[in-house]
Image 1 (cartoon, rainbow, N blue to C red):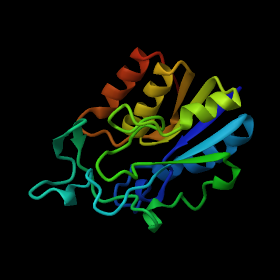
Image 2: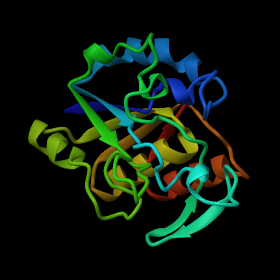
Image 3: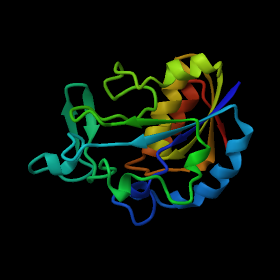
Image 4: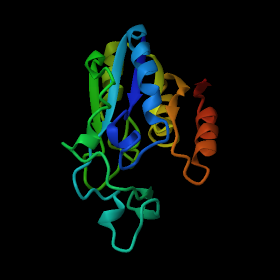
Length: 198
């Protein structure tokens, strides 16, 4: 049984958004075309409360993309993005969200960020996605979405560690590429046993 995990195809990560990933909107139509070929389709949605601890605006003297230490480890500080209930947090208008079976919201706890579809950034707090996939009998996962070097990367590695057979369709992802983060992410995914397919 095969599952498609569509990561964070939201307005704030698309051109014009507060944390726009270059070309983020280019993947929407081909992702829509993929959905029918899978036994389960899951969307993830970044869903931050205002004033989230990962926002640079929550830290005096800090700027977007600075790195700080949180109780759970290093954390990149981001521009305010995907704030609950805002247009930026909504899925891209052209994404066929109604074709999904499940929406996993992440990053809603104020004190911990959440890149992965499976765990918060403390690597312990579960989103519940693993249990859902197990009960559906899904063993093979294909990941697409935004951004390749952060949320897709973390999700793919966690999925592989959990024992799923994981493929990332890199052509249906786009990256932020912050200080070489893309090269590092691709290497880390390969090392974790993730298949990278253009």
